[in-house]
Image (cartoon, rainbow, N blue to C red; front, side):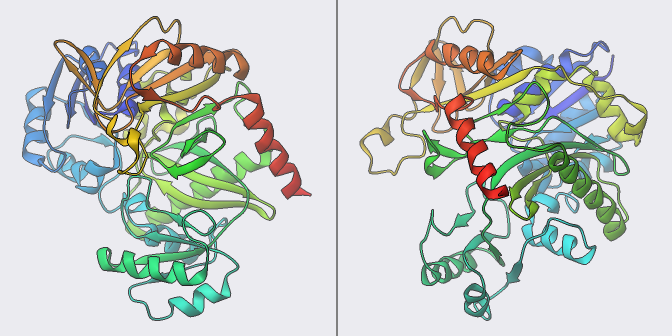
Amino acid sequence: MPNILLIGNGAREHAIAEAVVRSARNPGLFAYMKANNPGIANLSRGIRLGGYSDMAAILDFARANETAFAIVGPEDPLNEGVVDSLLTAGIPAVGPTKSLARLETSKSFTRNLAEKYGIPGNVRFRVFTSEAGIPEFIVALDEVVVKPDGLTGGKGVMVQGDHFFNKEEALEICRQILREHDQVIVEEKLAGEEFSLQCLCDGKHVIATPPVQDHKRRFVDDKGPNTGGMGSYSCEDHSLPFLKTEDVAAGLEITRQFAAAIYRETGTYYKGVMYGGFMITRSGIRLLEYNARFGDPEAMNILPLLQTDFVDICEAIINGTLDRLPVTFDKKATVCKYIVPKGYGLPKDHPDAQSTAAGIEVGDTGQARLYYSSVDKRNDGLYMTTSRAIGVVGVADNLHEAEIMAENAVAAIRGPVAHRPDIGTAALIDKRVRHMETLRK
């Protein structure tokens, strides 16, 4: 009956908490959260609220509850070095140290690592600390992607054709980024379909979970600004309709090579989740980026399907014994649709942009699962903040049934809310399939 510390307060952490308490080991869950997530609180034996940079408070809470190990959900505490602090106190963690979390927190670290160790899937790129050399490199590329070197909450990538439309605008964006960041990365723009491959890693062994496709665009048919993610889906065959078996295998192999390269580079084993964002292009699989934790919303697609005891998985990650543990998932499809405030992602001067912090009422959502994100439970009900509110997940034998389950549940949530009704639908997925068929030809 181990006591487990969960750090984080979003829908991803709600899904992690659910997986923890489902364990046959009957663990005691204790949550350290920046804000009070009612879903996590209901599953926990104790909670503490505080900032993710307050290491003294985190360690005090961990020691007081005789924590066997910790699970770190979001990227911010990883970037603050929470795993380093826990290890110093003798508490192991599922999550990388601050140095190894650079896999996510420093895009230049990841690109340079792939180049140094010859890992496949890298793109044409250059890292700049000043404007010198940027114009010449931009001209050499057909179209470009511009990224700041650091955490941006999933919203910092600027793509030609979406966020800017010519090389002069790209150069100006680079200048803006360099005013706020030490480095800017300029990459070639790729054409293809994206998928997320979240892998469990103990430093020596890497195990893939079912692939997922996320939808970052705010509006139907992938229109509007990028968000933290409006929803995602996975399929019952543990593939995606536009993927080939070799695509997933290639993503897994790239991640395995990264795990080995990280150890060679740092002398430290990476213990946690290596979540690769990949794109299938005409010329094969390409790496977009890595995250050093589960995805949000993608965690809500794969954790409900997990058959293997999650506490056993966490201990295998910590002990370096993932190769001895069969990790299996239900052959089910999932569709996640995020409930967001009506004004989410809209310009501040838009009439609906004021419809953010408001009360919502949750009716009969049937068999769908609800994972709370940025909500505030008060005496008089449930209130949204200005960010994503609730992840609504349908789990069924096939994608069609999972999508209907999720959409029916969304309809039972009332208030000034919005969502992407097209996520998981046949029309949107057929569009993805046709796109890849054209590219592969």
